[in-house]
Length: 53
Image (cartoon, rainbow, N blue to C red):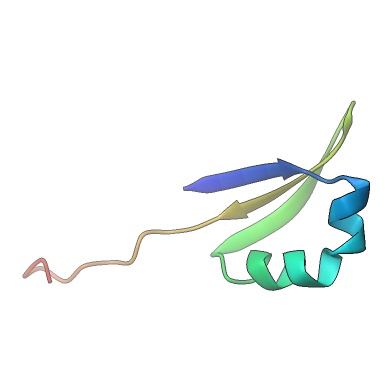
């Protein structure tokens, strides 16, 4: 799953808290667009063993 959100002034003001959330994912980053920046977070599903537990 990938979650994206616009980086706004409010986001920048709360960057420490945002970073704590981003670091919980498998990957995260920033993407520049013509309209600003997008922060994204990728979460991988936990792997299940062959028994399906």
